[in-house]
Length: 52
Image (cartoon, rainbow, N blue to C red; front, side, top):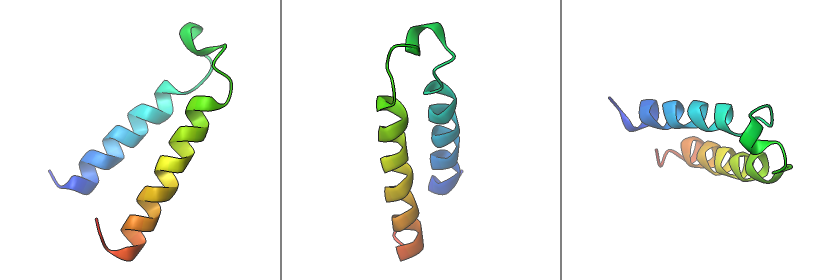
């Protein structure tokens, strides 16, 4: 497996985990999805720069 495949799998799992439909995540608000958005933006920038 390449590093890109592993990052995509982790990203998909993180996207599923931050949905507020889970009972334990209902009162978290926009915090987890905002942090995940920052991680996605950083990964996109690294991919476009050719670092990953």
